[in-house]
Image (cartoon, rainbow, N blue to C red; front, side, top):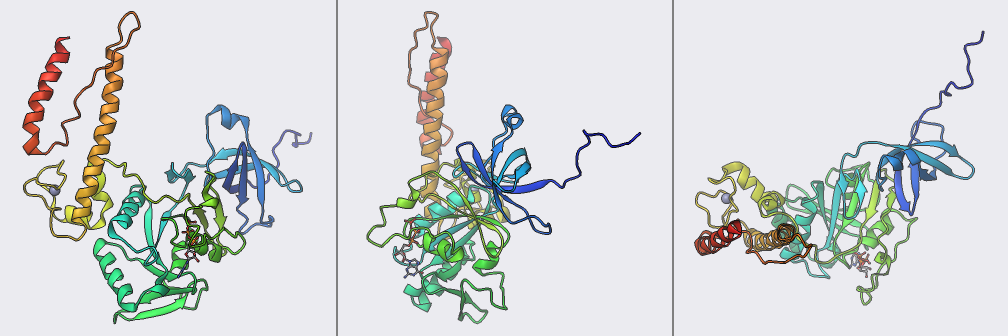
Length: 383
Ligand SMILES: Nc1nc2c(ncn2[C@@H]2O[C@H](COP(=O)(O)OP(=O)(O)OP(=O)(O)O)[C@@H](O)[C@H]2O)c(=O)[nH]1
Ligand SMILES: [Zn+2]
């Protein structure tokens, strides 16, 4: 009797790939072909119904198993999604390693608060943040060194580039600027260069409008040809009218995602976590520790973070914004709870306003509010 049965699975190696784009219910999967005899290709795949039943979503950046490849029609089916190492919700991308935050050192003028807003937003993803200043062709060496030192004080070792002149500027130990080709790997492939930072990683590019993101991506991946906005048409933003997210393969290895531009990212983090998003504040906190575990580093006694560091006023500004945001969320929640608890048997609902959370009130104002709020709470308990 033969041991072969017709049902025995064929010993074919699993096809593994990365989802690089999602269109309706189809997924473009770039196959991992290194070290195999497979053709380098992208298959248009569906999601197996079992995955749908399990509620398993598939995102751009997901690493997946593909079965039933049709090499001629370039089709396949996704049967498995590997656990995600990271997950961003806006834009929706799985397994990204870092954010490349691009700003211009001039045109538009580089401004500490706007830059910090983007930095905080980027830090809040928990991914590595790589800061890159473009248009260095427009400034003097002094200005470049000024920003380099200033950003080092903030805790960032920024990259300085000029996409239009194809140059990258590094600073040696004698404080001298050295120019290198930006898009060619020279024999000195240094750690603090852009191509090195991008190699073999999944990078999400972010930054305000007009800083040269499209120009940079076009140079890094000549085959994609994103539209570069003319200076006058900066607000047209044609290429970002869709919510489409796509990963592009870098010739030097790695993937790159362009994100819809936004000029004023919302600060949605909680007041307590804000310190984590200022590297220099985080450092102070770790060195010293504050007396109160819930210290917001404003006017609390024995605070290790409050001090004369450059961005402290920006921190205080953002803290106010974070507190306002938190209170707004709390009010929404309170209204919801009130709506529920005030639901009458007849089904009639009555909305009642409630005072904002007292948690973040400064000590000076706390007392007045507390009495009012206590009264209010006593009143609702009696009801
Ligand atoms: N001087 C100088 N200008 C540059 C450089 N890189 C890009 N530009 C110019 O800056 C303008 C904006 O470039 P884009 O690449 O469209 O900028 P973007 O960040 O993609 O802008 P959005 O598409 O609005 O998000 C264009 O006029 C570019 O030619 C550079 O290194 N130096
Ligand atoms: Zn403190």
